[in-house]
Image (cartoon, rainbow, N blue to C red):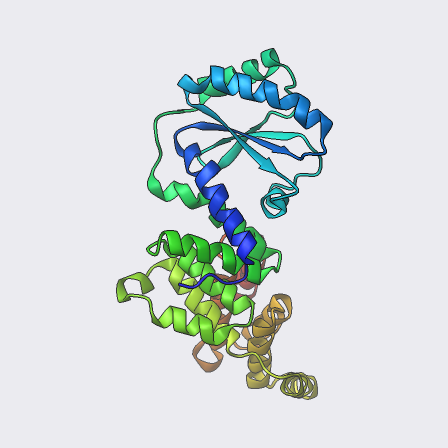
Length: 302
């Protein structure tokens, strides 16, 4: 699949970070040093990091340096606010903040503690290799940065085309970025055996619900119809579908719950099915889904 959302430089940053940090961290402990040329304390710390990393090399410790001026994208993902900032990375995830260690003895003590607890050198399952990038993509998508999220998921899908979490995330990001035709093409190109995976089913549900997005005039007409006749379940259902497509999940759920409260079996339970589809799209583990599911239970059984 084509990478979307990231600039060429950002794509290069992700690829370089994958190769220099994430990949090696699968069976090594990576000391990741965020620094800059103008940073005096960084220059003072560098010899300490280099010396200790060399001393611990035979125990699976390596040093990776990241210039925050040249690689602002990755630094932003780690929310680096001051430098030097130093993390210990294992299996793609920060496992300790080493910034406070400014002497050889301090850094050695912290590394000793980590190496006692972590299976450094034991290796890891290949699928864990992209876990931090998947988390980064999901975070960007949750924050509303669909284009950037699509770029991250696209990078993973290029490296591992069979990674259903990345493929599903990419399609959902395309939908969130309003690239519905592109998302539909990507979904249609998937092999049949992949489409039954929950990650792909979620992406498909997301695309189907997004297709209901109306223009402003049509949305206003639906709102007027519901305001004129609160018992017009079809108009309320259509309005809920439109609100889902515009991202107003609270409003959509309110209208669907109203229909269910008035007539649980209306249109063969269409309102309940639509609400369940919304839950699937948002993610069944999401806090909003849990809270809204409780409201649904209260309406059905209260």
